[in-house]
Image (cartoon, rainbow over all chains, first blue to last red):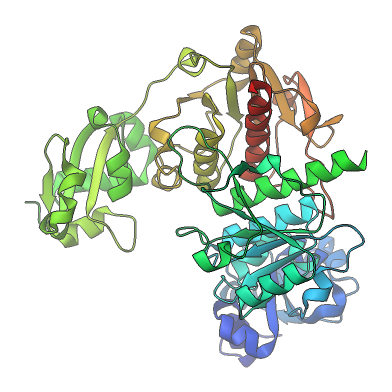
Length: 263
Length: 263
């Protein structure tokens, strides 16, 4: 049992929670809480840590079933490793995913991609992934300057979708957008200067939506790569929508059209 | 000029930022930042505070035009009053709104109400108000146990919509739902057990959507008041959507149907 926060493993977990650089060097990320640990793919689990009081509760045995063994830490040490105020007493180190563009295009149905440029809010990214899984997206692509998807706040707000939706970061979002177009993906950008309202376009084919930064929207270079600009018309004095809201409206409109065309 | 954080006015502003009880007793709320102060209705402004360096920047003069005078505080005092890390140097005390049900039903077009039960996340509430104004909602009703709309985090995430969309809290959400039904509002609840998908219902008449708590959804009592349950169908293993996302999908589907029926 680990009883000191000076333990090397404990220090390493804390580093992995705090720093994207440490996560990327180790190729790992941290997943915390009963629900998230229950949903995580067991074959990706590198290491599991549980607190003494977690282990004492026999209700928790099923959370650990199928897991490859665990390390016990004192409740005080677990608190130091956790980033929640009321830790549930279980966290896992999980191997990062290595998806490529083919993983995002292999689904049987039409492609439905989300391409995010420089999104900064962890809650927005996690919410887009969670809503995206619900809307049936086939993958997520992020520019390198987007917030780290393995940030614990993102992981938590995905509610497990991070384990199921393929995604990758690209160093050159313009090149990736070009490759998607060559592969027959029609790219739409949500843009105030869009000619048509979003519901007037057809999303039943192979498509991708470009979503920009919370404060500044899409760069001119990336929105210039879009085949079609679409407008989300707005009442009142609202100039823009929260990025996760705008993305969700487009993703669920796509799902709606695909349900209608499948009838 | 106020140069001490022990000044009674400064202590009062800090209380108003922190405590819903203080806000409700004073009938005031705090609005911070250049953009929000620019948007706020001048006739509701009770008092304005600016920092020394805010005042020194001549660019800022237009922010104060039309305002009824202001109190100057040192930069250090302003930092203590602010709840942001890089304060913009301007905040206002604003009188709370006193809307009633008639204010939410007086628009020329069909009613489009959002009825929130026990929402707890300030970001979700602010996002619903902002997206709601964009979707053309005519008002927002909240159960008494919903997070305080005058919480500074809510105010900030409304991006000014809080000044334009009428809203009120009700002590008895069931009674209010009953009154809405009597007044010809068709109530929809987003519910996993809904028979039809949400896009199969007609939202062009007088309607309201019931939205529940983030973790627990709607209570049985309130969802039982709905005329119709609707389902947002979901792919993958997603069990529920973020409350602001679910609300936005329904609000923008309503806006879409109303645009189509107006053609």
